Image 1: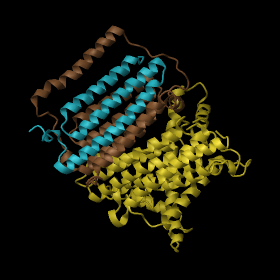
Image 2: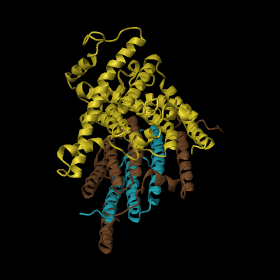
Image 3: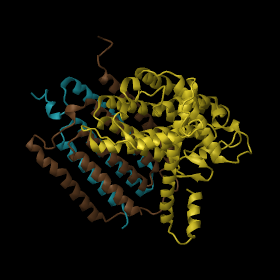
Image 4: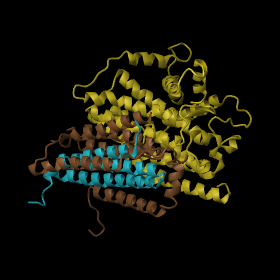
Length: 171
Length: 350
Length: 101
């Protein structure tokens, strides 16, 4: 069962990402990415991380991708179509290098180290909201507070950039 | 699943089926059951809405179809909608246009799975139940954006943009208003939240803590906006946008939007009854004869309240809607979270 | 067939590479931002997989941080793109070379 779910979610997730890259229309790309993110949530659920799985749906599919779709639809017209081929020919080798490097590295690593099996037993509360919350508000409290500052700065920054007329105090 | 899984196991004999088979069978049965309940409640609520609207506006509403107070009006409407031609505009994006209604409906249908109907009947008894409901219902926003964009109609696009902005914004106070309750139960499991409210009306979370009392009203206002109903029906304002994101839809596809609107209405009402109004517990302790019925009656009363608000108050403007969310409701809900925590510490309930 | 840690890492690697290639070959700045999101999301799988492998949920905290960073990045990036679109009427990165000339 786990094997089937892994291949199902994994292949669909990869396919979603691939379709996102090769589709010419930005809207279609965004929808494929949503699909890919939903499959990622399935992968998280398989990794006994239910909290992350729900967060993935809520944050990525429910918020970030809505923002993307919103902006694409608002800009409309000229942003929708796009060529795939880079205009600069010098970039072509760059496209082939990363996949080749990743494949070589990973296959080599797997050959050298062998397949690492996951431990069978795991704590019953592993990855539940309670467990993650204990860590987040305990050992990682400082990081938690800092990330909230990052989000605050992002909100203020987005508002400042998006203002139609600059009403700066010194002007 | 529980009760149903046991039933299926009982019918087929305990050893005849594998666990996975039972699981799949009960999941299919439950999904079908939920869909039927959803369709039924849409039928009942359309009739109810027209009657409520009629009485509020000093008229009768539908009176003829089916003789008794026009009870068959909704059925007749449904048959009419099914018989309509299915039109896809020539300039529309065919795939997204036909897929969007399904996605919108899927968002509400998935969320229904975690509703605890009675102590031993929850379709999916998830540890993260409440959180799961908020997560999957956000899928509907993508469906709405898709519908608006694929229609290739400026009114539909405006409606979709308004709908997405409104639903994303109001999700925040909606979730924040539920947090004080989660602080009390220490669990996001929907059944646990209801079980924690045992023992009569005074043990309902609504009356346990003054801050939760305020949070309930925040939840109620946010839930009206979340279901795109008046006075916050900006996405469909018929006087400005024809019919918003479903302007171009007809027949069955329109019925899907219609169905999901009433399914969402009942869903947020059921969540209100589950989180704040004691779920399946009756108001007087020791009189819990029909838990599921109690739960549904509370939900229907919340729906009535919703309709009352819709037909009484005038529609707000878009900027007022956003002002209300970001500058009033989110600060107040946050205050409720902090205040409820302080109250718990002061009363030694933590 | 048993699913091992290596399977999850290979999957994450494949998805990361897809995002990386997409970032290079696409000219639409919005799609390029989406490719960055895809890469961030694939690293999250690595975190979660190693968490499961070591039975230690610290990785989940990192994933949550990553979610927040991805959201912040999307908000700022899209705000900048909308502003550029208002002035230049395009989001094609090949047209953003005022500073090069």
